[in-house]
Structure formats: C-alpha cells, structure tokens
Amino acid sequence: MKWKYWKVVLRYGHVGRKNEVSVARFLITEVFYNPIMVMDLASEMPGVKCNGISQVNEIYQEEYLIGKRKEVENFYLQKLKEGNGFTS
Figure 1 (tube, rainbow, N blue to C red):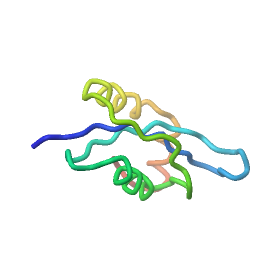
Figure 2: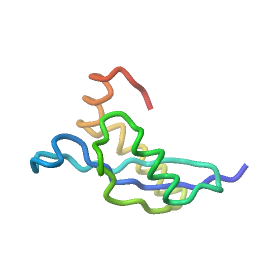
Figure 3: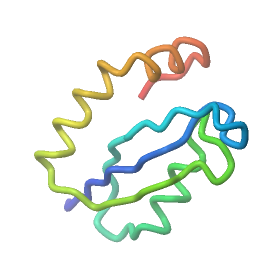
Figure 4: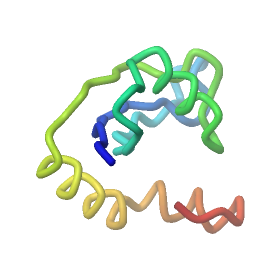
C-alpha cells in the first residue's frame, strides 16, 4: 500500500486572544488523501481550535520520520497528551 506524508501546523490554546501555540504535527495517510481531507482529519485531533489549521504540506517520508521524533520531544504535546488521556 502506498502512503502520503504530511506536515500540518496546528494552533492550540486561546487562538482569538493571541494566547496560542502553533505546533507542527506529522501525519501519514493513504495515497488518495488530498490537502482538504487532511485538514478535516487534523481538525478532529484533540485540542485543535476552530480555524486552528494554519498550514498543510505534503512532505517526504524522511521529513515525516524526523518530525515524528520531534513530536515526542515537544513539551506542549506531552502535556496535552497527559491531560486529555490520548496517545498518538
């Protein structure tokens, strides 16, 4: 099966109050996904605010793997996962 890799920049926190945090998330989808479908998928992720998607880019697998390692080290995502009880 073929895959597509995506870098999606999401905004968390109080977006309208300029008290937000932008975090890059790295997603893998089936090959038929397009940017609109990825936006729909990302908008349902825990903690993402309404109008919280600021960027969607298709990337190579190497960048995806590096990005996933960075996600593990991201302090905000660690706290978000602990607080909401979800895992990636």
